[in-house]
Image 1 (tube, rainbow, N blue to C red):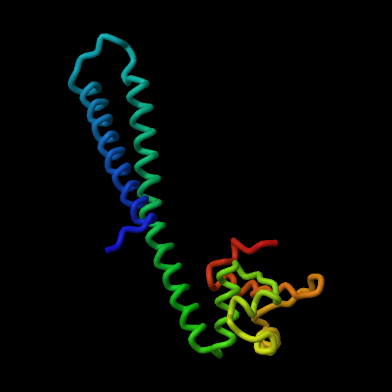
Image 2: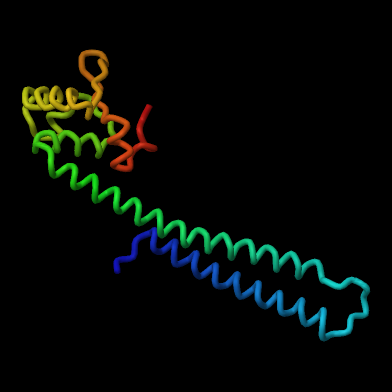
Length: 168
């Protein structure tokens, strides 16, 4: 398996979780030994620093476990969404796919005047394809000076995982 930054972070968090789990178990064992097997000269039954270490290590351990299981589920969901989006791109026309892919590369927004350079299409081809995509509600054209700002619809941005990165 190829190590990606997400996998490295995950491995680090699992290691931290194991270490904090170990610290918690050792701290709990010390508290139990002090309580039941050692005679104390002081009237307090627990050592405050040990309780702080035990509770903080337990909190870190639970947090790492939650992240580990939830991140795995999220990663599977994102992978499934990417597969669905790629399958949807295979169904549409080649020119439409070029424009949508160019828009995705630019976080869903691109000037119409730059689309022909991005896609390798002529201006007329790009204009006709944009008209088809606009009729299908795939894109939204907004007048900006002498050209148009072309945006992917919010639904498609979300489907391709770019919804949170869209420029205002």
